[in-house]
Amino acid sequence: MMGSQIALRLVQKGHKVTVFNRGKSKSEKLRTSGLVVADQPAETGRYCDIVLISVKDYEAVSNVSFEKDGLIEKSISGII
Image (tube, rainbow, N blue to C red; front, side, top):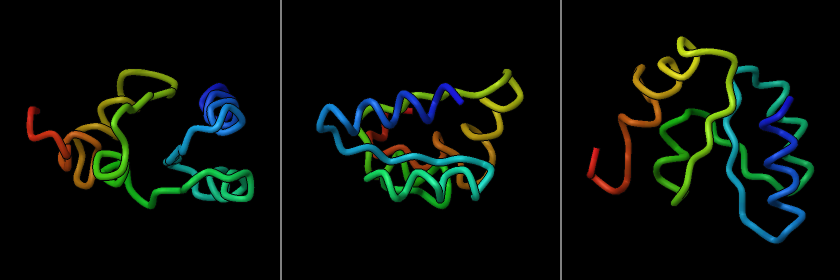
């Protein structure tokens, strides 16, 4: 709930925003609002300079960050 509102506000302010949601139906609703919808968290690492994670708990952060096709797995900076 909070993550989608942050994303929508950023788009309203003129930023290009890419989102990923584990529940595909939720993220598809955002596509019509001008957001780019990623199929996997790793895509945000390819397209974004900054990533905000808005999830329920540590397990969810771990899942989107470190599992296969996770955010960290495909970082563009090569720093991680």
